[in-house]
Image (cartoon, rainbow, N blue to C red; front, side, top):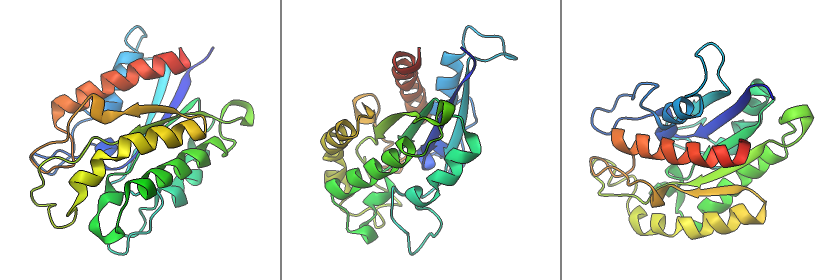
Length: 217
């Protein structure tokens, strides 16, 4: 069957931001690394069954141009990234947290539509096997927890974030994408409110690995 390639397209929670230090978790701690380890558990290191590409960027939005932090529009850059890693068996889109910033005047519907646009772009990219559509998995971020130094940037985001799961589920179904509610598996860190602690990366990686097995196994 050959090695399967998975692209993980996300923001700082895919990059691996550590809420305790402001640094980055190592590649084995990040959820994508946890997933990779599980998927390749029965393979020799030199011959993995799954190749996992981690494409996380701090501050990345779904489809919004950030006037403060430019160059982070997920929709604007996804085609280039998809083409650089094709052919792809699966594209995992895990975005939406940064769209909660108060400067975007966010609503749950708008954020979910933005995520849907990114997933649809992957489906229509022609970067799957033999130029077909790659499979897609749309992940909704866990609700925002207790905000600390992000309190001003994400003011009012707690209640909006709780409404995202229902919208993401609906919009994923509309375009035939698989869906995962991260909030059903993990919680955001109370250290900063938006990032994931080490143990939550492990839980998320395990949950996504099980989902991937059903999609590509």
